[in-house]
Length: 111
Image (cartoon, rainbow, N blue to C red; front, side, top):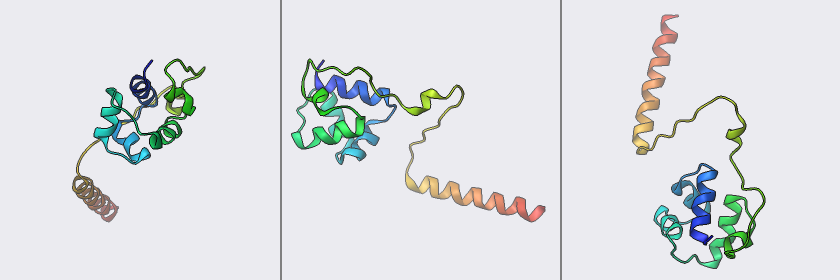
């Protein structure tokens, strides 16, 4: 399996976005996408990727290298639950927080 394919598989199994992985490694989301599609990865980022994805560096470096257990997110151990991921500009969340604070204040006033 080539490095880009491994990278995408590991990222998806950990349930993290390209953006989240990019932040952990210190590159852009576009760079992660390029790597997943087979573009070469500078050696300085291999160890950062391995750390972020919780795999040995050799697994990413060598095509025939395998690992016995692919890391999975802790959330999979839960029998029930869900997660919302909302991608929006920061001002959206700031405005939403102000509105929620306003509602909480109004409810407290009525008590």
